[in-house]
Image (cartoon, rainbow, N blue to C red):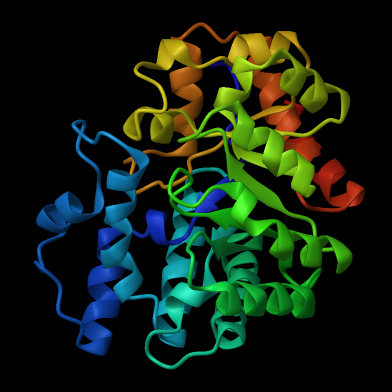
Length: 330
């Protein structure tokens, strides 16, 4: 790669991207018992092995990091640490996503969770020079509707004050998109933009459902390649795909990187973006994701197109997008 195109990550889960070092620090602050206090050993509890067989297995790695995301201190420190690492890696803008309902186990309200992270986003920009925003995830389950509705209300309260969108995350095959029409009808009525995980662990039908719900972007979406009509809709309506190559390999959404339909999507004018998903769980960085693309034959012009797509697809103003474009002109 002649240039560094890895400057924007639009699909990045906070809990899947905590460094073992910050987990140890927060655990020490708060007397949280971990399975080990050794950084190297702790990594084994946080990263998926190559033998990981499914998204459901992949999701088991999130229990441990969520232990340290139950206090204002933990949320703030974890977010600041992520921003510092991303800034050091050359990123200019990231959209961090997390589910506030998962951080209320020790008494915090969802509003307090979000306020703690937004403070870190502001301080992180001042300290490290990286701009960021927050996407709030609703969680797939069959007994948490009240929590999901609360997340929508919190998103509305902080919309354009650091929160830019909603998402639907979790076990896609167990709790499919069609279970959540009502929640996203409410979000749409409140003019809250949203992305939805789809076409990752499920087929192209889940992408169709997400689009019918009103999703402005699709999380992953690689199985959209199975349906020409879906591809045409994505292209015509400029609906971006947030593709995460290493994560897709880890969850066995693909068997090898060569299966990634990036070139086909680009050829058919689909807005492909490349992201990390979970930096720690998948042991990856955005530079690594772009290197994967280069290794499977994505050329310089296509890499630039993907980076440009990421700018166009961000939940930010046109003025902010123009600022980011300067980093691609070198």
